[in-house]
Length: 355
Length: 232
Image (tube, rainbow over all chains, first blue to last red; front, side):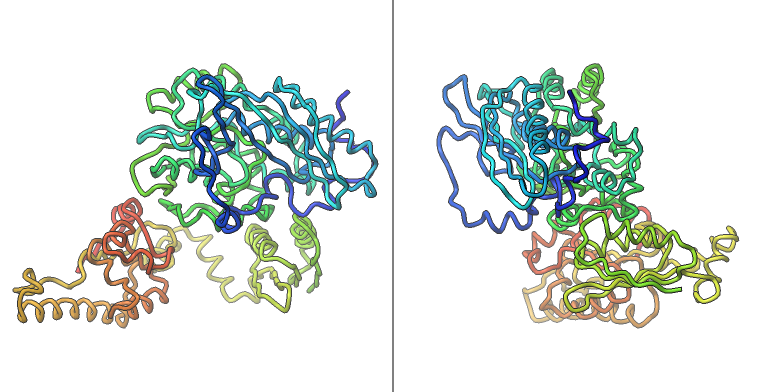
């Protein structure tokens, strides 16, 4: 029995006491850099991916054929429907495993809940949404930990498996590779608009579908070509994640505005000031690396920095493979687009073209 | 009619939503709003711009005050000009071409391209550093460039941008003789930009503000879309 998203349990609204939801809740890249600076660097022969190069997950080699992938993700409610929130948060966490090229195996839930402010039935629904999403990924929810708290938080620690030779990182892009994006952007702005009651039923359905679609099929379709680099578009926004991939690959990037897919009405909402706080944080963190060929309308550049929740994959593939890959993805029901490419240049720098 | 709103303590998107409701009332000409974060100020500014209201904001004690005003043709001095530009296409295009400094995109206008840190070249300059005469020639040529920029500043001519490449980026040295006139030109709304690759080559990158660093890509665009390029 699935909860109807239009009728949340009880009159209480989950998002009422949330300061910032979804990937808007992330500490900004700018601040994160400062607080992580003092940590010791972890290096180990078997640690194939760690905190360096902004990788999506850690990868530890067990043998020549097997490595484990580890990732954790959690945030406050982005929607009022508890079941849907559970699904979205779980989806976001599982995505990091796909972004490394692996398959999720087991997950543990991380849960904080204000038991005094909401009925327990709401907590149960959040956990059920998360559990169903884990099952959809073919993984096992094996436990978790919960605490009472003033603010609701839900997420997962996920373990996945991969053959070391199949690992996908941020850093393998090559000059003249194309950048393929597998989902539209604008969830930050759209979730604020949702909260404001401004989304039509159709726009809500479109948004919820995108937020609960796993990246498993996108990864599977991508495997039909040689993937040079891969990440998922989440809290740092499209510009932030392209910047990370470019910097890690020691290349510059070019992005085409006309090729981007935005959620319906996202530009209109951004224009009206429904821009989440971390979009400004992302702008501060990354705008020094961006040049514009021409002044962009403010609402378009706002969307480039818009933090994404459960975003799609960002893939670097050979320019000769781009058209075929998009066709293959289309056949799998994924609307992928070629949004630009990597070039020799100042590592991490992005040139934004109109078309 | 004026109204005050205290939106402190409200989280997104409440401040924008509540303000939007008030804006929809055409009888209100001025709304004074208190918010407690810079993000709210930015979002209200976007809302105001989308609804064609003027917006002024300033920090005040521990919060921010944002004032939105509906522009009317009677009390807004620019109102009459606004109508002329909108209704007369022919007039509008005349206005724009006569006043290139109002053009805010990277296109059109005059670009000044400075590709070395001197204006022209004196006889012995290519042997700079080799002899007294060469050094005097070099100093003369650099001072001439400074004179050109000072004259430009006072002439009333307003180029769209001043672009510096190769040794021209040396003009951006914060301890050099050119930085004062360049800053004064910048204050007039002229873009003063130096090529990042060149700044790096001449070890100046750390000394120049990020918003004044550009790249070959943007430089190309400026040059190709300019009405005219002047290279001293």
